[in-house]
Amino acid sequence: MYLPPQFKAKDEAHALALMRAHPFANLISVDDDGFPCVTHIPLHLTQIDGQHVLLGHCAKANPHWRYLQARPQALVTFMGPQAYMSPKVYPDLTRVPTWSYLAVHAKVEASLVEEPQAKDRLLKQLIGDHEPPYTAQWRGLGEDYQHKMLSAIVAFELRITELECKLKLNQHRPESHAAMHAAYTQGTTTEQALAEWMVKLGMVQP
Image (cartoon, rainbow, N blue to C red; front, side, top):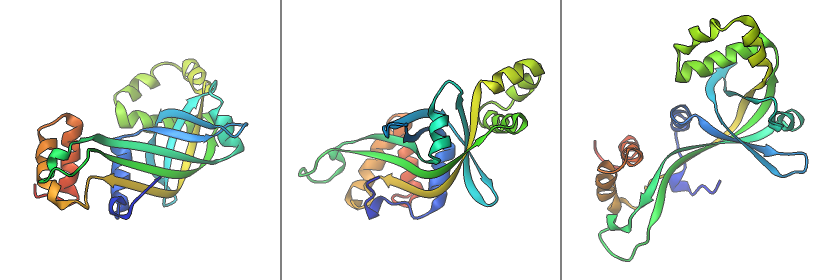
């Protein structure tokens, strides 16, 4: 992605925090004709052998897993909080509107997870992110039903080979920070999240 130096995250922890807080991602690779294929899925961030890995699955009817099998390199994108930024935050009038946003791009190397028990463990990690109590219900559904559901999906590990994190919060325009933070603090939930990130990045005092 286009990543001017002033918006490039200097701490990997920011990228990891965004991926955990906003796990619904875009998995992007190419189909057999070389055209981009995108699947929208939740992913679980973990570590395997000291390397950051994203765990996920798609329906077996979705051909994307076949593209990953044939061409394992892919891109995963995450979008964090985002909102309009009015030029009213500046002390002068010769300014234009823009958009504030936080985003992560992860280049990955995909491998399929085919063994049923391994798929079951992967699913439990995803369940643990969003509804831990459901694990007990899943276990009580019976082996036949579980096997039927597991056979209807293809699970995969996406080993992260490169991370880019863009924090576009007008860092290079300090004259806007106080008014921008005040406006976002009084705005929507998403705008309030951007205000919190301004504090986290040391742009304004809490």
